[in-house]
Picture 1 (cartoon, rainbow, N blue to C red):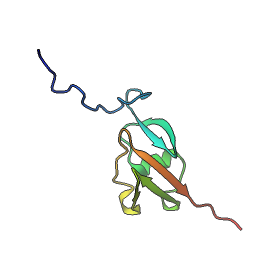
Picture 2 (tube, helix red, strand yellow; picture 1 turned 30 degrees about the vertical axis):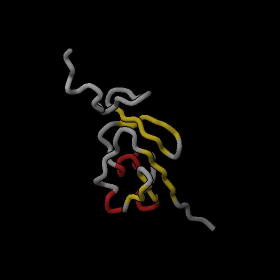
Picture 3 (cartoon, helix red, strand yellow; picture 1 turned 90 degrees about the vertical axis):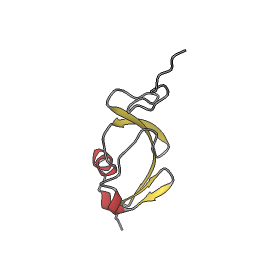
Length: 88
């Protein structure tokens, strides 16, 4: 019997409902595919959110503002986003 070294390996975009070049994440409780290769800052831009006005929780940990630009969005990540709106 021959086995492949890549059997069961995770491939970007390989999650349920994902398309090639995309990864599946959960955003505020809702599963959604997003483009592969994004950073968290890139994800926020795609969502038209200003990073300085958003608190990002990634996989149950608060992501520091200094890490938003360098942190990749990966298959299976779970995000909770809370953004602040000014008003009177």
